[in-house]
Length: 393
Image (cartoon, rainbow, N blue to C red):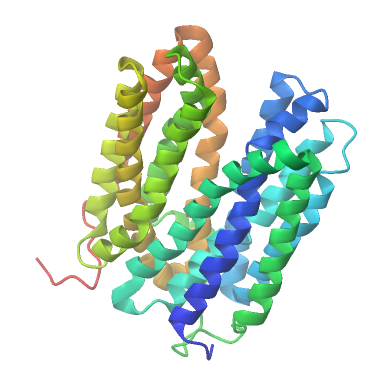
């Protein structure tokens, strides 16, 4: 690579951020579109889940291959696939076909963000890994936060088809940008050494990777309850749809805005404390949600949850980034992504069962307990973790 690392990071942020805006545009519209095509509640759930099922299955393989074949081609191919698959959304005459479309979309997604994270960790100076990872993750979260708002505006003014065209256009634009601006990395890594390429089974057995993966799974299983059932909780509190959007927006945008600052902090301290403390605080915020009333209190807990995750996420990325240099960068990032996706598959199913059996409040209580359980698991596996850049205790 002959382009500066900061220049590559800038291109990655633009490419991935804009692509995530496109993905976010259709994120809240897919269930509506499925219902318009005649889907019932169960089929809508299958359509939504198929995206994360695909990510869970494919993510480790894409990371393993990227550690051997480079990053750029995977990122460009994934962005181009986003654009092509956007057109597939316009074809179905039956809702069942959306299961396949969403599955393909999930396959494309594992070629973009996890591989871009791996490339970012590859090019980051040793003392700026957290800053670089946090900056890219900020672009991802901002894109996902802006997308749903933009998608609603496009659908209201131009129709559902226009939203899919918008996603496709943004994806094709970013694929061209990435193809032109990201230098080729088909040769061995910049330091002259070949990328690490351990077998996936050996990587997963690493205690810290196992701890991060389990923590991400349980955190997603619990936090998914908030993203799925918070609108119902808010409506029961008499809040309008616009205020529901404000609640979710505050959560996502706070996570995004804290990424860079928290990433810098993770470069100066042991990031395991950020992961453990932030995840635990997130669990406490979720626990309080069914026991408060009124917009202000629910908003406050969403702000606290967003701040907690805004601290925890960069800490986890720095840990995986340091280990990825030893074990295989994209493999580690993809395992991390697959664990989160698996939790997001479990979350709506488990939460729905809890809702039917025990009521809405228990969805948040049990979700909180899952997040806190993930914190305990992480604490156990991280007990001896200390990054190389810190001086011995």
